[in-house]
Image 1 (cartoon, rainbow, N blue to C red):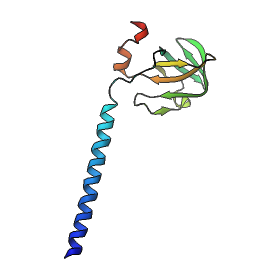
Image 2: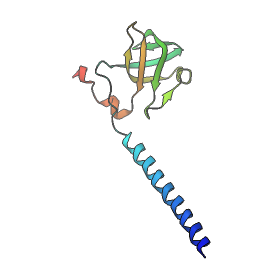
Image 3: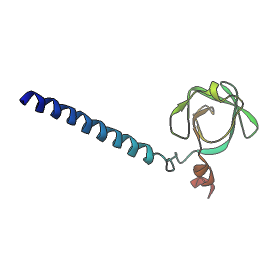
Image 4: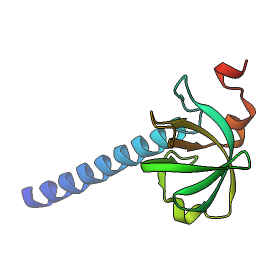
Length: 119
């Protein structure tokens, strides 16, 4: 009889732990649906990946830096090769040598807001 209670107890504990974990994940996902904070020196433009690391920003040729990071609307990293030919509204930051180093693909809500430097 004690054995049955122990099994029931462990199963209940596992289910409870799984439920709490899933609730935590869904809360984290909903928290990311807001507007992300961008660095104060971020600029905005329309980016097209031509052939990595060659891109176009605002219709002018440009270049991604070695180790450049492109983040999607869900803040996950995107590979530049998967974005070839797509026109994306982005915020970006250049490195000291002038190459584009950090890129954030904007959601519609983020694109509608002005950057603090543009106000």
